Amino acid sequence: MSRIVPRLPVIAAGVLSAPFVVFPLVAGAYIAYSLVADDWYRDMFGDYGAKLLVLYVLYAVGIVAAAVMSAPRFRRFRGGIRLVAIVLAIAGLIAAGFLENEFWDDTDRPFVRGLLFVPFILWALVAGIARLRRRPKVSP
Image (cartoon, rainbow, N blue to C red; front, side, top):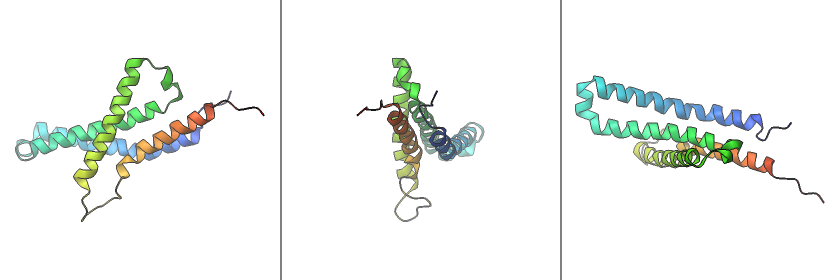
């Protein structure tokens, strides 16, 4: 029995997108802790910290939703689960755009523009590979 999605693209996409999930969640946990535990931080950066917390969590969850959507069995999921995954992936893409605008200005960019969209592109490529391999072979 052959696999629909080859292991190498899935492993590569998982390894390459893992830091894009872990770092925002760690940063979000730190921000949440600071908002709850530190009065000075809450008074000084409360609104901005809450905004970043929401963006980080939506971004990380969006990447996980994109990975779920690339699974071959995603087509078999019920309507509600599929809709939630699609909405979360779109929310993650929107959060990536907001984070790009928040941190990368024209004068001081530590990373290349568009870097936050890489995990979404990787999982779209995995889904495309799975779709190509599912296609029936045409006989001559």
